[in-house]
Structure formats: C-alpha cells, structure tokens
Amino acid sequence: FFDQFRMVLMTTDVDLDQYDNFLFDCDGVLWKGTAIIPGGLRIIKALESQGKKVFYISNNSMLSREQYVAKLAKLMIKANTDQIMCSSYAAAQYLFENRQLGKVYTIGQEGIAMELAAVGIPCLESRLVHNHNIPRAELDDVAIDPEITAVVVGYDPELTYTKISYATWLLHQNPSVAFISTNQDATFPSAVRVFPGGGACVAPIIVGSGLASCVVSGRLIGISTSR
Figure 1 (cartoon, rainbow, N blue to C red):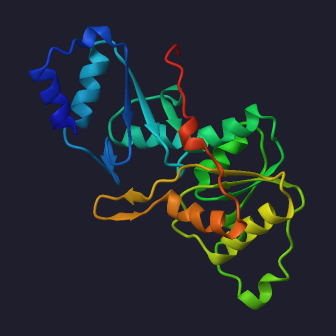
Figure 2 (figure 1 turned 135 degrees about the horizontal axis):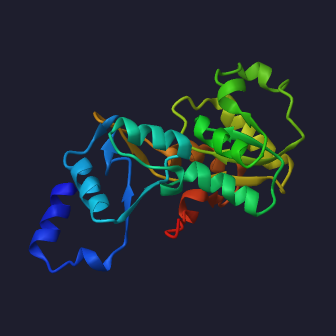
C-alpha cells in the first residue's frame, strides 16, 4: 500500500497542499498483527512534518480508542483519542446519542465495554460470564437478565454456543432490545493468516434470532477534523 502511495505521489500531479486531513485504515493497511507495514511510519511522519492532520480509522472493535493510542505508540506513532475512530467507540456513541442507556450484553473483546463505560452505559460482558460452553442440558436453567436493553456483537475469537444462545434469547423475548454489530467483515488478517472476522461472529445470531438486519456501527463512523 505505502509503495503504491509513494508511486502515486511521484507519478501524478497530486498536490498535497490542497489536502489538510489524511485518514488511514489500520488493520491490514497500516499494520498486520503487531507489525507496521513497511514504509508506513515514514509516510505518517512525512505528512505530520508538513502540518497535515492524520486520523486512524478501524471497524475492528477489539480495542478502545485509548488502546489504539497505546498500540500506535508501540509502533512509534504518536496520536490522541481525537484522532481515532473505531467501531467500539461508534457503537457506544450510537447508543448514547439515541438515549439507549440501559444495560448492554456484549460479545467481543474489552474495547466495547471500555467505550460503553466511557459514556456511562453498564454492560454484561459475555467474555466474563459466558466464556465457556455450558452443557446443552443446563442451558434451560440459565437466567436472562431483564435489565438488558441492547446486544452489541463484535469480533470474538472465543465465541461459544452459550454466547450465541444468550444473545438470541434476549432478542427473541423483547423486540425492543437493540441489536448492533460493530462490523460485518468476513475476514480478519493477522501477520500470518486470515481468520474469520466480525461478520462471522454476528452471522449465527442473525440467523438464530430470525432478524433480517442489525445496526452496523462500523458503517456509522464519522470524524471531526476540526479537533
């Protein structure tokens, strides 16, 4: 990507002076796994040295904005939360702005819970209560929290049948429960392999709940360049 970026600048009449803001995707573009893409840091530094604003965009919900800042720091890139827009943040903002402030059942990593906490929304994290499969014969005895008003599903490498079941029960028993998917990516790239992505995690809940659709917070990403 960055080789192509440099070639475009060298072989076209692109005038960087006419652009003030540059948005970079993260997973698979700026980095893969824990390694930055060759040339990535050099491009970022060059843009910043010219006074350009650089923003980092990701529909990956595994991390919060604070965690993205920390990850960028490990890659020698200095940023603040105002430069980050990720789908975990977008999901929390969607609920907050729509005044859906009740308890949320989350499937995914802690980034979702951290962003919900930042806007004062309580949650029941499946990774803490349902991270092991409960035997099918015992699932009928699992109590359903009546205070849950929304289900948020993100990429979860520890997805279990118990988590899928609990989410579908919540959506079945109360049609007013909001259903949000942080993203519907088919795949998730690592430095070595390509794995099933967030879309593969939410798909069985869509099928199991019988719902035709859900809100996809990764499609709601927006960023203010005035910050």
